[in-house]
Length: 366
Image (cartoon, rainbow, N blue to C red; front, side, top):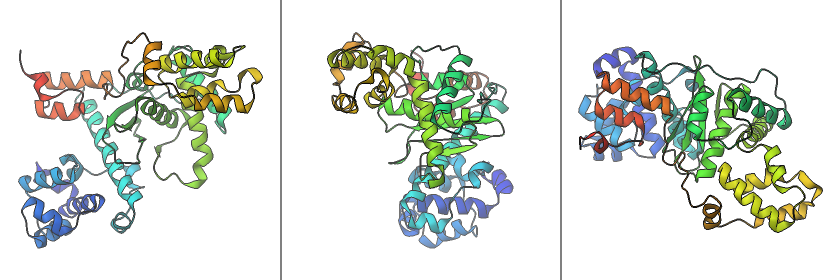
């Protein structure tokens, strides 16, 4: 397999991907050589393409650098290639190291989605894009309302974000992103994917998923919460407005606090935040314009953050699993199982493609 892929990519490109991946982890050639049992000079030759890497060596390299094998054997999507930092930048900048690893994660996720589509077990989804131009936060909020109508969601709480995003055409997965990276998304040849960091708290995960969905609906080809260029600040603000409105429509938030005193407002917002599974800050933000109450009132409300027990009590102590336990879209997960049943992939590969949704033990017979 490695020889076949090397013919497509060239040994030089495989070596370059090894080098960039090593730099993204902060390891020297000597440190990597020690970990995989090679001389430093051999690692240098691998990275320059002067020596071919065998399957065992590449497996060791992938394990030590914490990248999947496919990262070294597959070219990144064109939309990622246009943004990838060079080796010197990775060597100097923590931001570029984080960006490189994030782009590797989303490229790997895109490859898995496309593999299942190519195998005929996963159907492409139509991409739901807002038909109008969006130039600010108010229009972005209207786009969120439009999407809820398209998906038949009304103003009710959303279910699993992976399922909602899949219905809108975006396949979203929870993955181990580096510290400081919340998520990213891209569209490549009409296939839309997004990733969300497993490090985030549940409410932040849902906000990030909604944010990345906003980039799709509002028409961005590629987005990342990492190092957004200053000229895009207003655009990101509009995308945030889309995400907030999509998760919790202001109409519902304002109904909950209208003509209520402070204690009633807080109780209603606790219930609203818990049922819609959004952060306290977002719930207060969506409710704040209603009722003519002063800025001081809402600042005090924002500071009165509920306890975990209050949130759970408002739900009757029923757990509501989401991105912490649902790590891939349901349609995608079913496609993985179909591919396994049809012997298109191995059990090991199925576990890998499910990204922690299942373990190898769960495939064992009772």
